Length: 85
Image (cartoon, rainbow, N blue to C red; front, side, top):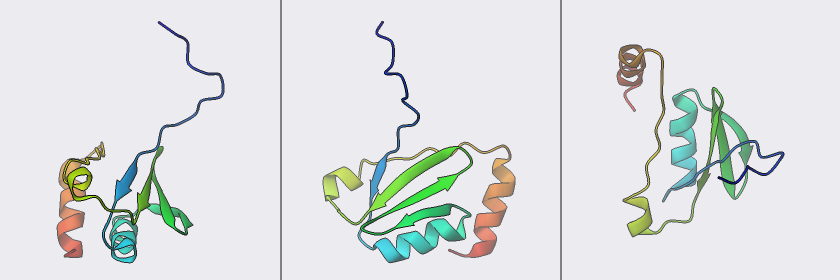
């Protein structure tokens, strides 16, 4: 097995969106911290980050996934339902 490159810190997925402004508001409402708002938006929650881009390819977008692991799923779900997003 090859050793990883020294200095490698994080891998961040790029997620597609048809409406960058609307998607940005959605992730901010969920509590993600916006680190950059430009041609792409960079978000962080906990130790995880991702980039949201307005480039949209239907086949790619329909297969893109992101996993968010939380300590209390019921609490998260109740909070999301209360937001009526």
